[in-house]
Image (cartoon, rainbow, N blue to C red; front, side, top):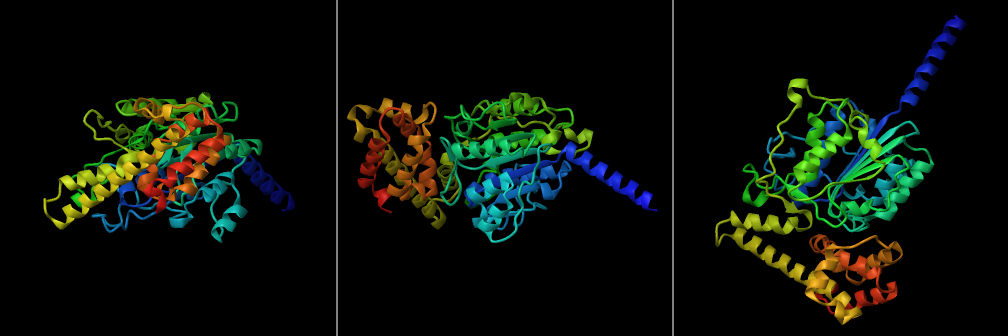
Amino acid sequence: MAGYKCVILLLCLTFTTAQAAKGKTWALLAASANGWGNYGMQADVYHAYQVIKKGGIPDEQIIVMAYDDIAQNSLNPFKGKVFHSYDMMDVYKGVNIDYSGKSVTKEIFLAALRGDKEGVKNLTGREGKVIDSGPNDNIFVYISDHGGPGIVCWLDGNDLTAKELNKTITTMHQNKRYKHMVLYIDTCNAGSMFKNILPNDIGVYAVTATTATEPAFSVECNSQYFSDLSWTCLGGLFSINWVYETESDERTSATLEQQFKEAKIACEKFSVPKQYGNHSIARLAQSKFFGDSALKPKLRRRLRRSTKNMQAIPKHMQAYYLLQNRLVGLPNGSPEHETVAKDITRYETLMDQVDSFMEAIPYTIDASFQTNENVEWRKRNFGDIDWKCYEPVIESVKTKCPGIWYNEEAKYYALSQFGILINLCNEVPVEKLRAAITCAADINPLCKL
């Protein structure tokens, strides 16, 4: 009898060892943006969850962070449901959201990513799910949100920088927390999170919706099923395409590279998705990160929607365009028309004030900088980020002009011009640049709010 028990114990230990050697697949999916206008970013994450869960990855290995104010939103004509495209498939049903509302922060995201259970408990006051991975495990990280040069936005204004993200990844590599890690980021300027920063020898492969200097786009923005007042975009251009590509592929044979190429083709009219890090990981099967194919073979191949006539809206201008489209469908003279028209005027005033602030900074340093051609070029063309300058400069914008940083509409528009600050960081001393920000803030009404 004792010998029999020993055999059973040995078999159990052998099985456990084999499972550990095979490794697990983990996923961290995040969208902190809230409000009806940011519907699509949460929908991106919910659909990614559905694809991964149906691929056989258990809930205990999937972490979802989403503000979760869309399904029951007062503007939602389909209460309790969230759609990712005009096929009207509910991607919200069954989603297990681990961190919502004010728990969707950069600090909790990074703690969950690095497997810091104590850190999550200290931040949330409770036990929270983390990526409890080891050296044989694969990790998939996905963010759909707003962003800017070297920045992924988080709702509380305490944003994730490329420096912080890459430091966390490097530390995880040193601590043998994964075998392969794959990151997808769908934000404006997403390429700046990895360009010339992410090493190619630490087992990490990153895909971004855009280059370092481009905006990202939202699509599926004119559904006939939503009223004029609830007009919104259902997803990100890049995100909708990679998610549907993964859903329709035979994941055990289709590679990450194939998925990327198809998504890139679908985006080519508007933006250029990019790859960073260890490109050899792109040759691995999708199943290693998203689980096995969930659809039957005859249902697997989904016809790709043409982008020829698709309406795509830059994410940093999304709220403004949504207002304009709502206005078109409202009767002139109606109370709703008047309200939306006032919102548009307010938004245009915000944009004018942001333009004045950003253009005053180089002019304060040197009047010769202040030509329209020079300023416009600098907004959208920049090289590597000097973080010793850029970090304190961002802090100056936060403290000297909170009306920009803590006003979402103003902030996302301003971030599209932060190339000016990166260029100036490479041309003038940081203290001179910070002083110029102070001067620009002193004369701008938006900074007095």
